[in-house]
Length: 176
Image (cartoon, rainbow, N blue to C red; front, side, top):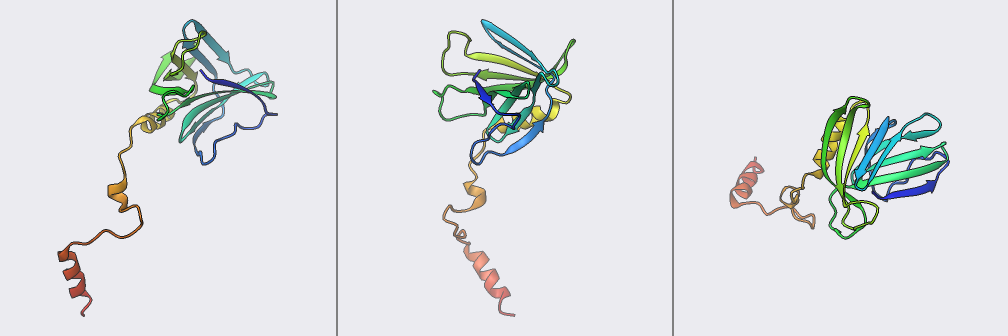
């Protein structure tokens, strides 16, 4: 799990250039991360420690504020071409229920770089009020996109060449 420590004075997390927020959840009640040999649990305690959730067009971002002064960030990225980067890549997403904390969003991630303190796979559970819309959004983002060149036309912006029958019918219509 790539975690970064930042001093922020309660500012929202910085997004990358051109990155768009698709979903924002102001409160995540609890989070757990299992990546053997480590297992972490974090609780939101107002004014002491608070967590939120951002889903962007590139990643899932979990900022955590300690005393509203120090911000920790954990991010898991949607598919990347660079499989050697030290970034957690989301492989699976699902929802579930825990008897103690309630409903959760589960992310299974993979870090291509091996670390001594964790395994490459991690299971992250984010306990929140309504995880289903987030699950649908992340599932959609994980789907491979088909090339859109067929729908959008040529890349140079010119119009596609029309067939002979289309030219004839448009010419006939303009003689009125």
